[in-house]
Image 1 (cartoon, rainbow, N blue to C red):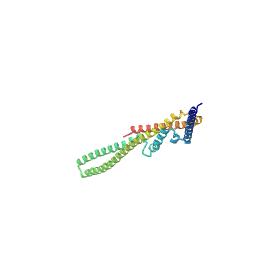
Image 2 (image 1 turned 120 degrees about the vertical axis):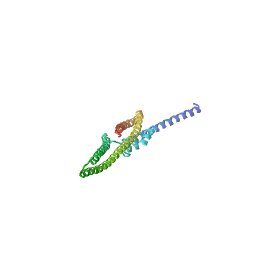
Image 3 (image 1 turned 180 degrees about the horizontal axis):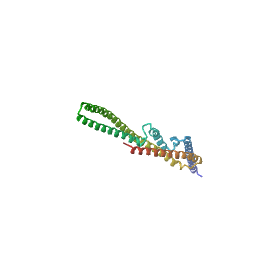
Image 4 (image 1 turned 45 degrees about the vertical axis):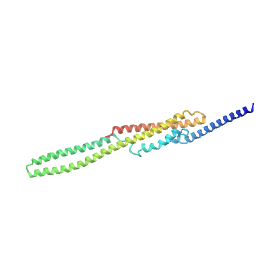
Length: 230
C-alpha cells in the first residue's frame, strides 16, 4: 500500500473513531440527563434537559398553575347557583317591601284626608310617620341588597377570569408533558436508557392525566360561573 493510501486509511479510521467516541459521549450524557430527571417523582424536573422545548415550556408556564388555580390570585369557584338567586331575591324583596309600604302610606294619607275627627287625623298622621320611617329603612336595605348583588356579579366575573387563566396555564403544562411522553416512547436503545425512559413515561402519563382531570374540573366550574352570572 502506498504511503498516500495509508495516510487516507489512517484518517478515515481516526474519523470513524472520533465519530464513535462522540456518539458514545452523547449517549452517556443523555443517559445521565435521563437519570437525573428520573430522580424526581413529579414536576417539570422529570423532563430531561435533552427535551429542551418541553422542559422550557413546562418551566415557563408551570409556576403560574398553582397561584391561578388554587385561589391565590382570586376566586376560582362561584359556590352555587343559589348564591346568585339569593342576591337577586334580596333586591326583588327589598323593592317589593318598599312598594307595599308606599301603597300603605298612600292609603293612610287618603284616610287622613277623609278623617272626621282630630283623633282619627292623629291616628293616621302617626301611621304615616311610621311608614315614612319604614320606607327609609327599606331604602337602606335595598341599597345593601344592591351592593350584595354587585358583589356577587364581581365575584362571578373575577372567577371566570381566574378560571380562564388557570385552564390556559394547566393546558400549556399538560401539553409539555404530552410532548415529552411522545418523545420518550421512542427511546429504545440502549437497554439502560430504555429502562429509564420507561420510568419517565409513567411519570408523564400520570402528570398528563392529572392535568386533564384538573382542566375538566376547572372547565366545569367555568361553565357554572358563566351560567350563574347575575
